[in-house]
Length: 299
Image 1 (cartoon, one colour):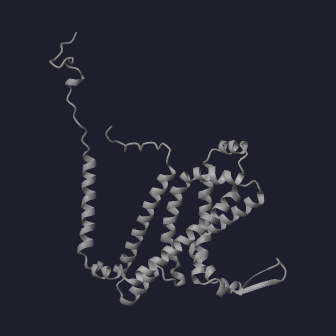
Image 2 (tube, one colour; image 1 turned 135 degrees about the vertical axis):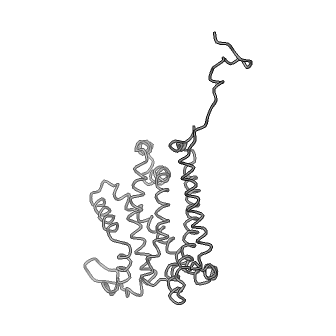
């Protein structure tokens, strides 16, 4: 038998081996290079006079910019709520057994995902050129009530309609994917218990589908927030448009673009935080698998 040392372990056994940690020289070199690049960027931000941080500080909290941020938030909120409501209806139309509803929903999604948002906005902005009046009446018959298109749909209304219809096409596919992720056996069990169809959707399907819907929906809302900058073509006083107006007057392009960028970063960060807490709420009671370690990491 092998001799034992004073600690009782066999001489020459695993306990007597010297453990040498792995040296990740390439990782250290890459980290150092990244830190140098970051330091150069920060140095340029602080020392380059073109950034004009004094102009940035003058306008970042100005009344005009803050009001423009509020308009941006309003457009985002309206388009998000209305877009996801319409998108949910379209999603269930696609999931229905009616070929008519399926065809109409599929066609809507195909058309509105194919046309760029800016084209849709310009179209709705010029709706009065196509229809001078909008009214209610018997289809293909007399009109009982009508109103001038410009009076009914103003500039903000046209922007909300364009953003909503565009967002609904993407929201429909997000909701449909979330609903399809729910096990169909649960609906069969609910139907066997006599639970009404609408209650099945509201109390069984949607709460479970939210876990699959929320990550993509959160990204869509953040994209919509930034996408509202497109309405500058309609001369609506949102954040990007107001930044353009100001630097068009004073010529300070870079600091005014930096003002708009800073606000977009703040708003998207707040939305990301809200998304995290909403996802965590709907993930209660679900075991989340641990994220695997990075390739080549220690175990």
